[in-house]
Amino acid sequence: MSTIEPQTVPEGPPTPSDETPESQPVTGWGDRIFSSAAFGAGLLILLVLAAVFVFLAVQGAPGTHQAASVYGPYATNFWSYAGKLLFGTALAAVLAMLIAVPFALGLALFISHYAPRRLAVPVAYVIDLLAAVPSVVFGLWGGRALTHASLPVQHWLNQHLGWFPLFGGTPSSTGHTVFIAAVVLSIMVIPITTAIAREVFQQTPKLLEEAALGLGATRWEMIKYAVLPHSRSGVVAGAMLGLGRALGETMAVAMVLNGNPLVSIRILTTDSPATIASNIANEYKNEDPHMQSVLIATGLVLFVFTFLVNFAARTIVTRAERRLA
Amino acid sequence: MAKSIDVSDVNIYYGDFLAVQGVNMSIRAGAVTAFIGPSGCGKSTFLRSLNRMHEVIPGARVEGKIVVDGQDLYGPGIDPVAVRRTVGMVFQRPNPFPTMSIYDNVLAGSRLNAKKIKKADADEIVERSLRGANLWQEVKDRLGKPGMGLSGGQQQRLCIARAIAVQPEILLMDEPCSALDPISTSAVEDLIHQLKDDYTIVIVTHNMQQAARVSDDTGFFNLKATGEPGHLVEFNPTKKMFANPDDPATEAYISGRFG
Ligand SMILES: Nc1ncnc2c1ncn2[C@@H]1O[C@H](COP(=O)(O)OP(=O)(O)OP(=O)(O)O)[C@@H](O)[C@H]1O
Ligand SMILES: [Mg+2]
Image (tube, rainbow over all chains, first blue to last red; front, top):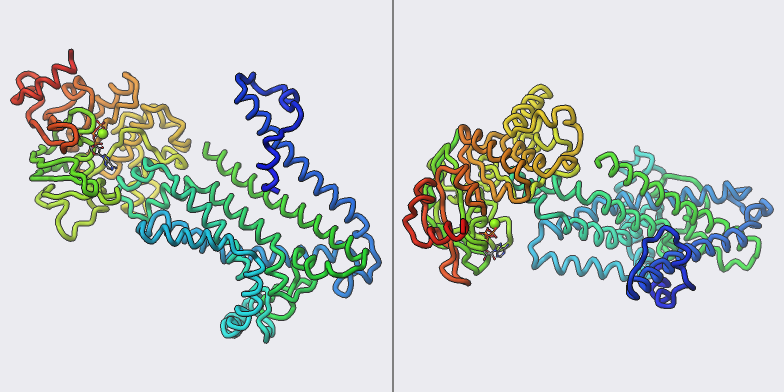
């Protein structure tokens, strides 16, 4: 969506400035053109979002009340079908974030505050490159290589940590598990979260860093006193972008996972809950128009869910910020 | 508690750039020493070398000896973090930690030194430091509020409270009043007078009257020429410096400033 924005900016909508009564008087052509363009771009994004929503709602509406057989064999009605897929989506995304966020923050701190410049620049560059790798490539690698290569690890986890429900059950013999899907997702989340965290870490005012160092803080204490508090909202924003990618990722999960709409937290077994996006990718070839409308309706569920998650995260951040102001 | 500082043959570099050259001086314990001089002559650079803050800038280094209490700050095996805990610093712009309350700001240094502080001890440190910084009366009813909510002058005194909370031996101040109005400035100057009983204070200032008012000794730094490193021209008791300086350059600078 965001790629549409810059292209349409120059055209601008017809006299949008008339529609903003509260905008301050603008002076000069540059101001007027720029404020119209900015306003137009903002309006356009909202329109596109609304259009997507309307499309999903209209096309998906019939999908919510199909015959039970359409939802089978794991569900009998739309809400349990979508609910199970939503569970799978959330499970894979949460696991991916649990792996990715600590890793990304560590990497970002390493680049911004620990590594010598000679090392920091190439490492940052490689991570940015990772962000540009198409998800199909990660899917191929995850599905073909990582699943087999990681079997010993998966079995080890199952044997030694099997008492913990997440790692319990009979482990899959092929390695195509939610565990690996989450690992692949986390590798796709890490670059974007790292890039944003690094950016905000580096923007910590020198003044604050020196305030901490001047008190006799070690480097880590300085990071705790100055860098992390200053970067909190930026880090959450970075994690949210990563989460958005994890929730919506299609191909990589579809290629790793042979999932079904079911609820199971045993991430090393063959009972793999599908995610909404991977389920759409797998079932879309299905010509049945009933199934198609069901898939579109699940797409709407994902749309709303992602929206709510973002909204919740922002509320938490603003509330935390306001408490300090 | 207050300690003297003996500086001999100090050269200070930013990478290959020699910023300050050949400084020798003895800073007395329990006195206020002021550094004056034109912009860019290396006052801040030299001040920051006194608590090893200079080296946090990549490529920056110091040559020579700076001896506090018989120990060379730049000697082998000396931990810069430990040095900064005994030589406190107040910066030009007030820099309280924005996400911390007034209370937590004051305790920031103490929490570094000793992880666990009893509530009663913490309260005592906060009150003593804020009283020491002449801020207690103004903030005692809102200790839980963020330090950023204070006026600039109050913030600077909060930073002074934060620096003295750990009871350093020496307190370095880099133009602590340059961002403050005359009333806050005079509050900080009064404070410097009170603090010198307990601390050795070194202050950089562009304000001649301030140097004359608060300091016992003054050091005048200058550049030999543009592009040359800064150096210490004269170091004398403040009274003598302002009445009858040894060096004509000092005289010119001081009188130039007073018109
Ligand atoms: N971070 C830095 N990197 C490289 N050179 C620096 C840096 N900071 C200062 N310098 C240089 O070191 C010299 C001394 O600067 P310094 O800040 O110590 O001067 P100052 O006497 O404190 O000036 P002012 O009165 O304007 O604060 C100047 O030539 C300055 O350009
Ligand atoms: Mg300076």
